[in-house]
Image (cartoon, rainbow, N blue to C red; front, side, top):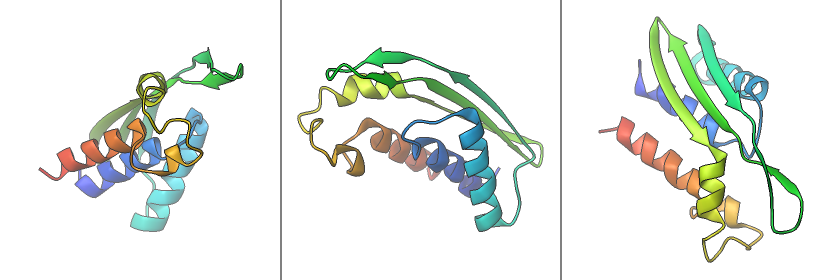
Length: 121
């Protein structure tokens, strides 16, 4: 499978603040159609829901999504675990900054860039 297809899957998954299986499929279809002119053959997406209480007393969704993308019979798998990211992010000195998740310090950004870098090796 072309690395640009894999990168699109990574960027769509890691670009979500929180979401659902249906939201991810819709995003992938729309972005693949716009950029490459087609929609992938199929997806297998497993969503595991989990809620935790945050410091301000609100519940935060910190689930996990495992995604398998299939194009021309080839498979690519990637997962994202929001709970792992949340546990790392809340220890960061800039975590309470309103723009923390817009910058390069949050764990989701770091992991996405690491996965994309691995594609290009």
